[in-house]
Length: 240
Image (cartoon, rainbow, N blue to C red; front, side, top):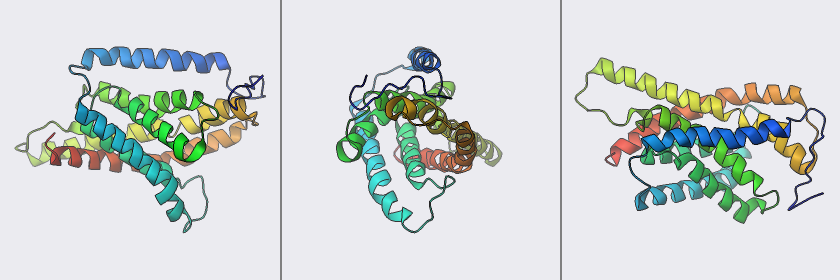
């Protein structure tokens, strides 16, 4: 059985049970966005959609054009993922400008749509839409909810003392670290452990998965911190 390039390999040795994955992709969005409804005091504005669309477009340009050029000067390594780092950095800038639950999922949906149009094609969909929106996007939205919409401590007075400002910088770095660590998980766990065997019938190797999680964390964490600090500055610069 197959559909749109999906082989539906559900009995590949070592792959995550489909019941667990389905439960995650149903329950996690319900919990996160259910909590987010209490926070959402206003709907997305036109400028929010502009930020989200530009962020999605810039992410595609970075990952498939700029990164392809930069990668020619580096050896291939699981510790080095310039394309994803740039995408995460851009998404955190967008999240800092919008700061409403759903911005992460929506940005990743726009990114996936444009990536399919200009690079991948639509084979395997709609699984990749669900995967991108409710892993990376959901993690960003969860942090927005946890900070009650004050992502990266953007709303604070310039009159605060130096000591308090330093503490806020530390908090921003912590938020970026949390996002970076969370974003190191989906590709090894959900893609290599489930989507790749489900769609392509690929072999699952949990040694590789564990190695990739640990290999991705340092770079993703640094990208998360830099994105958080830069996002805070950009948001403050445009009057947020």
